[in-house]
Structures are given as C-alpha cells and as structure tokens.
Length: 153
Image (cartoon, rainbow, N blue to C red; front, side, top):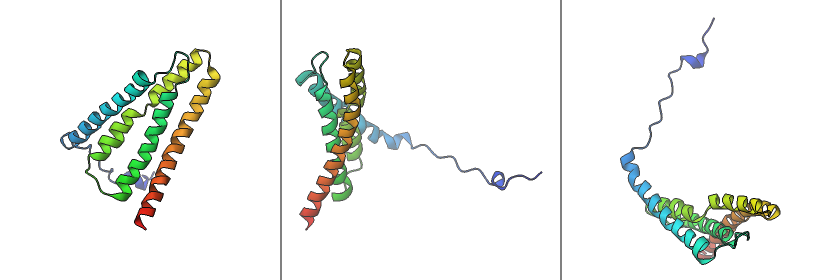
C-alpha cells in the first residue's frame, strides 16, 4: 500500500494569534467608539423618538439606514482620500458606527411586531431594512466617489 503524497508533506505552520499587548489599543478604540455609538443610538431610539407600543420602529430603521450611509462615506474617506491613524477605523467604523447601527434591536422589533399581531409589518420590516441599508451604503459610497472625482478635476 502506498502513502498519499500529501500526507508526506510537513504540516502547515500554525497560525499565530495576534499578540494581546499589541491589540490592546485596538480593543480600547473599538470599546470607546462602541460605547459612544450605542449611547447615540439609545438616545435616538429610546429617548428622542421612541416607537409607540405596537407601532412601526421608524427610528431604529432610520438609524440603521443613516449608519450604513455614513459607513459608505467613511470608507471612501479612509481608503481613497487620505491615510488616517491606524486606530481611526476601529474607533469610528467598527466602534461608533457598529454601536450606532443596531441589527439586534431590528430583530427584536420584528419579533415585537409579529407577537403584537402585526405580522405583515414585521415581515415588511424584515425585508425592507437590509435592502434599504445596502442601498444606503451603496448610494453613499457612489456619491462620495463622485464628489471626490469632481473635486480632483
């Protein structure tokens, strides 16, 4: 019996996990940004414009759409316009905007709508939010790139 050739090769080297000490500033940036973004979302959704009991969660919907649009513009700014400090993307992109947009609350809102007897609204929200969020990021990215090209010419 012959041994397959690939079993004779040396095993691939194990991938090393990032050093925790070098990742500490990134973790801190994400945590600080996430706290700020979550606080802003809470202020909008729960304090300023809460949805009435059984009502459509418009604020959560608009927070997610606006956050995705800002993500599109932000990524154009930091990848195509100018180099930024290495902690800007983790702080603002992952932290602030990740904490601001809220797809967990979106899921809870869908469940509340369905449990409250508003299945059609819950299913419409289920379908419309990701579509609107993707459209927002795509549109904002395109608009930012067009403005960048116009500014450069």
